[in-house]
Image (cartoon, rainbow, N blue to C red):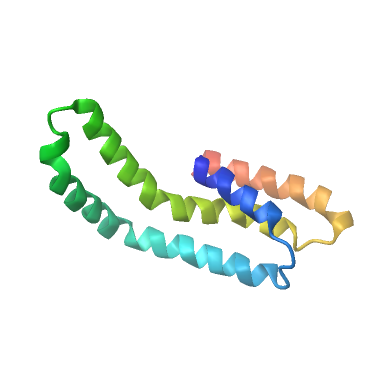
Length: 116
């Protein structure tokens, strides 16, 4: 959730984006790339974790913190990109259309999250 919030925060502060749909497409490609790479990134986490296992194995709390931190780190970039997409897409509408379309897009996005 932190990545989504950070992405939304960044997207709200972007000024002067001349082609928001191009940036939107780039963000979607970034998300897709991370989806494809997730298995390999997971293996990388296991390698890093196994390297530090001797150091953290005596303390369950440290072990969990290390594994959770590594997992959160690889999820941060795609979740930031996800958080940026919807606010950026809403910018594509004219100011007078934004309120109506924003509500519809957020509703569809929420429904998609529930179904997915």
